[in-house]
Image 1 (cartoon, rainbow, N blue to C red):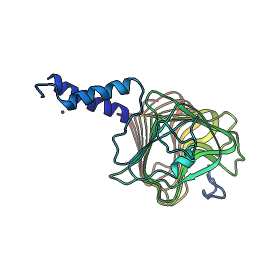
Image 2 (image 1 turned 180 degrees about the vertical axis):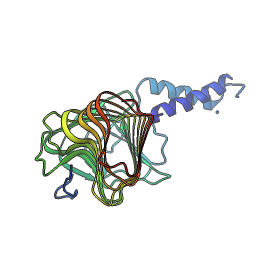
Image 3 (image 1 turned 30 degrees about the vertical axis):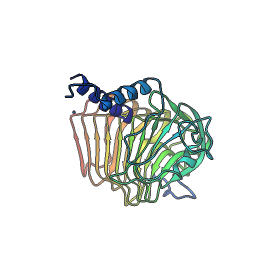
Length: 321
């Protein structure tokens, strides 16, 4: 349930009571719940529902501040609903633990390699999401065009409801990815994201790249990863040692890539469950890991469900290819 829906549910509840392949190591140089009468609370709730229906700025159920970003905004503005910010990267530098950033619909460009160490906490996570009912789209230009690379101590962040389309092809020896995780990045969630690659992409370009060091607790759920017909060695790729732990990949759709998921690292606690794969040669390639479960997935127009260079630390069950 997203923020807007949880708010609607809470407000309705109040009203009801009233009624009764090997890449180089990523671096900055080369990244890769009965009232009996009308109460004031009920009237406030009804007014809030009306504002929600009219599309007024939505206060987030968060412990921090609520900010807004728009194609017509300015990075020198206050970041309010009336005076939104303009660019994602400038906005990220202004976020603090517990904050919410709502991104209004429209098209935003990006290029180059964009790093962030934005961090919330376990009790004050950060949410970066589409403004409810609107569809922001980020479109890359040039090469590389790495939309967001979580680095350093980036932590406790959720990306939700955003569309990202990649840029051009890069040399195979360089590599590129729309979203990457390196350093000590941890407790980061991709939720209802839509990521698109391109047919021109090289072998070592990816939609999501999980890299080295101490990356931990990454969740990818209810998202679309569409390679656009690329020959990618993994729309989602795990590479470099030592690597990540506790990775959950569930209820996503992977399509239009030569290999959808590639594990080529000493990753542990990887769970690939209940995903749908289509139009891909290999759904999951397991070269090596320290613990991977592939279970309950289904595939359509998939040549090979699980290609195992090694079955050590690999558990496969209940899939339908």
